[in-house]
Length: 125
Image (cartoon, rainbow, N blue to C red; front, side):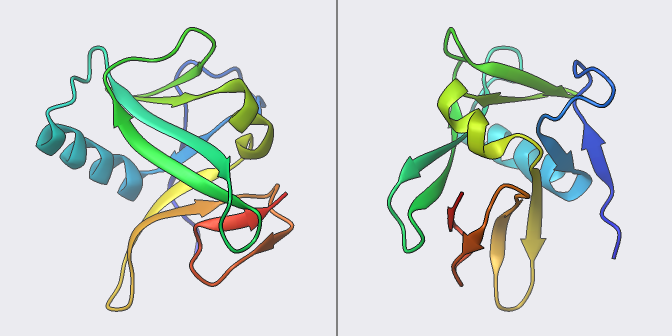
């Protein structure tokens, strides 16, 4: 099944960055409104941290503003922030949102992942 994937509006053509599916973008908008995060200043922070069953874990949260060295990706009125360390592991990935009977949540489709675990929130690069 082909996913409707969106490139960041501020990304150069053929630039390996972060992509987001339409399903994920819709869910991010809803969650930002629910959390009271401004689309003007705030956004979604994607990152990685040590730990998890495969060595690295994905980290996702809403923040009120980007950090100084963050890469900022614009998807319509939603901004996605990625710190330089996490970008090494996340460039070229697609953020999707999955809603099934068994699972509901964001799904990281990451070409840099060499091994992932069953929970889908941990990987090794």
